[in-house]
Length: 394
Image (cartoon, rainbow, N blue to C red; front, side, top):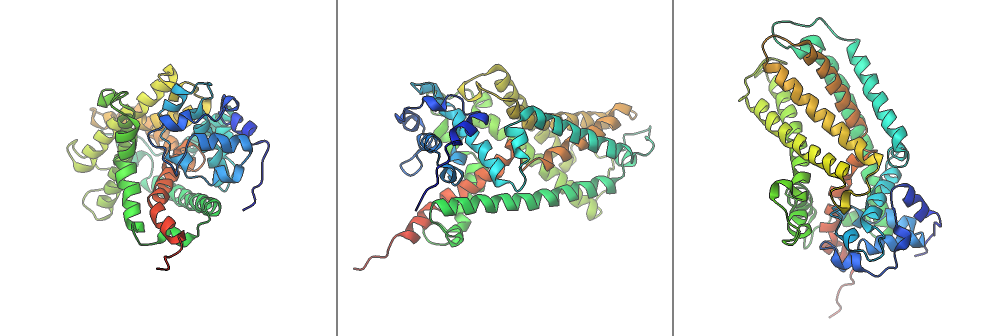
């Protein structure tokens, strides 16, 4: 298969944060130290070589850039200071801008200050839009949906989810097409039975790896570098993800209970009520995880966080604001009376959450989607290999 060379690839990746990649002498130390790198998945060495040789299509069609969890061991031990972890992170941002139908990702990965300004303007726009629909403030108890019509929040949120859903499907298909093209696969290879059928691969990708963090927990954090579990890299990452999913589940369950008439929309419920309890515990877990991630980047706690760019903060700050404002609203709900700041916090919280949702395909948030797809394809690899191997003629 002929290969097109992009001589500007390495320079472009530098603009996305690949600091020091030109120093690489391809010694292979980074691949040797990486516990996730295998014979068929030679990262980060293979990724750096692609960048140096201008193999743009091969880089964008590589699933390996999403298999990396950015532990930073490769950069810690690189004898040339080539910062392979930074190149892997830059490659992920680079891929995000090429997978998404719109090129908005460039603003967040390549022009982060402008991207941050756009995110702030989006929050302001949605905040003002919701503010114009406000009603009078009930003063006895905090009644958020008496202040902002429930139908408005529901319809805006539903429209945002449909739009993001369509964009996400488009980006996933683009990613799979690129991977299939580079690896000489067809879409049939992604949904085949055999040694490991697609259902088992989906279980491995979503439950075993994405939710339970098996590879991250057991392979990335070896006994030599393992810290107390509460500050370990895998737990902080998992806390952020589990907390986010818990909040999503509590919101969906609460919405379902409203539809079937178990309770009235926006009605006060005690703290031990299932949806409230799940949401509170998930929110605390979520805020903890995001706060630690922000702290590590701010303090450059390790090699994985030593070269943070403004684009690394946009996604995390939006997540943190969403979580903290949600928790402040939770406190306001149980205070006597109806504090006015609870209503204004609600407007800000909804505006931030909608902005975060709409930017999902274009910021680092997108890696949550792409990593699961890459893990799924990785789990299907034995099937694809078997499909491509000529049958025995014994």
